[in-house]
Length: 286
Ligand SMILES: [Fe+2]
Image (cartoon, rainbow, N blue to C red):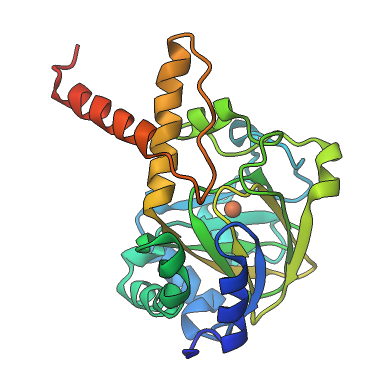
């Protein structure tokens, strides 16, 4: 039965797509008072500064590295106040550190548990993010290590999505470096565009973004506010640890086989990684 955030059609659409295909979903939280720009400016002031990111975002190349991302000189609070004109992108990370947003996250994700959990098991490590963007702001090509539903609350944007763990776009070495703490932005090649899928969303619409699916985003001609609610699964933690194990094997001069994509699992490699990491934690530091 549908709840307060999703109509039944959205739950059905998510069920048809999950976990590897994207889906456009409708939702009922666009006008939630916690998602107004004023409420979010207040939230940013209450949050840990380390949870706030911002950068210049208009006319960015799609394949810019994290290290090359430019800044405007404004601080994050000035950026939110001037978002209409300052050509920027703001990320509020882990907003569940605020109890009101933690409740919203738990309520909304609770509605999809009956769809998700029969497929990928328990929903683990919930996290919530807010994106506040100027008109025409670009989020360059990257992937995320979580399952994600992006809810549009204000303005509109287009996400261009590629297949999960597309091996031409994300090399195994890139995955291995990422799960060892490396950057997430990917290089861009125009030839990849032909196998992308574009999904545009306005307030009241959202996107299920499959785990490990490369994507880039551009907002349209107004200020955009989006809420991202994410979760992990046991499969996703095994995949990440298999990438870490492969990094070890590659450092030994081997060429390990890539971690397998759902529904195949990567338990043998991930248990090896976890055992080695436990031993390393017990060893005295140099
Ligand atoms: Fe993303």
